[in-house]
Length: 158
Image 1 (spheres, rainbow, N blue to C red):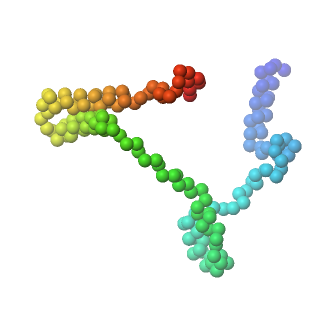
Image 2 (cartoon, rainbow, N blue to C red):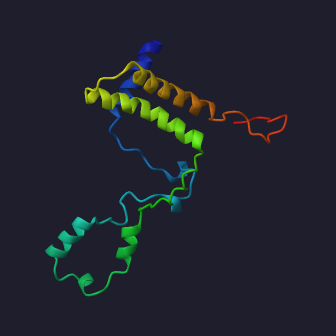
Image 3 (cartoon, rainbow, N blue to C red):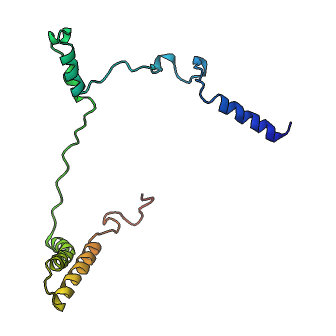
């Protein structure tokens, strides 16, 4: 038998056993049997729309006569409310002016073009210069350098 025919036979066996279920042998598991997850879920999560349908379909259920204390817990389960975000930092006047220039220049050009205003050369130049100046001012003010209190050797900074 050639090595190629051995490979072909192995592939045929793999394809033939593709839909077979795996055998669960507890000796092969690296965890104790008590930690195995059951195949079926132990409880069913009822959506509010399904809950109303169940109440209408089965009017004489026992739970109608007894208050269900677990119902509130189930509704809150899985619902995440993030904490409120921190307040935005206070901007100084040059940063505010840079943002206004960055968005104000193109906004003026867009409004003037949509309204078919006659644009003078100086207004066009001012709008473009405001955009470029605002962008440059924000980039320069980013402060991308090392912190002032870092000392002479930062070590491995990630």
